[in-house]
Amino acid sequence: MTDPLILGLESSCDDTAAAVLRGRDVLSSVVEGQNNLHASFGGVVPEIAARAHAERLDICIERALAQADVTLTQIDAIAVTSGPGLIGGVLSGVMMGKGLATGLGKPLIGVNHLAGHALTPRLTDGLAYPYLMLLVSGGHCQFLIVRGPEDFTRLGGTIDDAPGEAFDKTARLLGLPQPGGPSVEEQAKHGIERAYRLPRPLLDRPGCDMSFSGLKTALMRQRDGIITENGGLTRQNRADLCAEFQAAVRDVLAEKTRRAVALYLEEEPAEPAFAVAGGVAANMAIRAALQKICETAKVTFTAPPLRLCTDNAAMIAYAGSELLAKGITHDMTLSARPRWPL
Ligand code: KG4
Ligand code: ZN
Image (cartoon, rainbow, N blue to C red; front, side):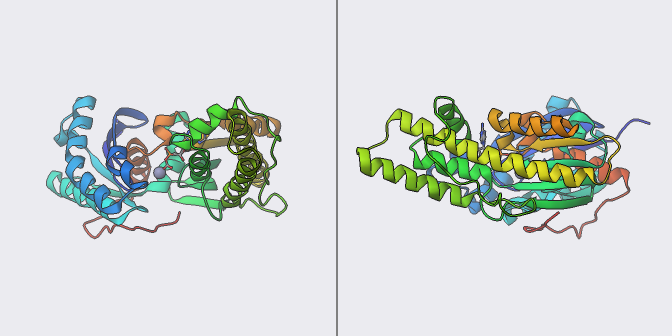
């Protein structure tokens, strides 16, 4: 029996996305960012985001169908992000999903956006349950043991900022371009770790919780100290601060990953595997540190390609396909849930 053809829709933040998937084959994945709409406001404006989703979803769907070379009538089921996220955007997607499912007479599946991220390593690498996942981006930072499409155990996460957010704020403090992650990583290549000292927050506390908001405050103090002393920052000062900041995030993520891996291994998984996903997984220094920990613990390390780690609809279609396989579908009472922890 061939796998069903699934149309996935994603509109929970500032990316409008549609994808067509069969099994683990991503036939198309269209993502339209809204950066240009929000840039001058210094952050995502919910009302503008919702309006853009409502205006662009149908166009993204048309493009996704065309790229996959299928027609709407061939689609077997509609999977849509029904939370968590900005309510206006989630509503746009849910309404579109309901309309399509009703019109086509096909099943509708509401998908948790975080479950979409968490199941991506199954789509890209076919990981077997249970695997350990670190979701680390501009908005997320958590360790999850993933046991099934609706079965997650959270081992810990950030108690304040996500690391990507901390990278972005650091870049802002040092006058570097956004997004901060890539610019801080580039500067760090020319800097010396420990030229300035930043803390490694929460390492003295047991468990897998993390904190990153204090790092940027500590960095700001270091920066202000240098400016007071020398009248400004040299290129080398900037590079050194970036190197130490990146090292601090790396050290915290590495140590907490080591602990999460130990907890995960207590369950004696048959095929132990770890996956890191999210924008921060693009950072080579962080990635290498996590990889080393997995090698030491004899746990397979995977990192899905970035285009499937950042917000997209293929992950929603895939999570939908797993739910559908378990017989989970939703009717017209499916609601948009702005808050929906895993
Ligand atoms: O997953 P993502 O595209 O979007 C969400 O947060 O949902 O992640 C974006 C975040 C940004 O904060 C960005 O600065 C960070 O990931 N990032 C990086 C790197 N590339 C992107 N952080 C550190 N190093 C990088 N190379
Ligand atoms: Zn996301």
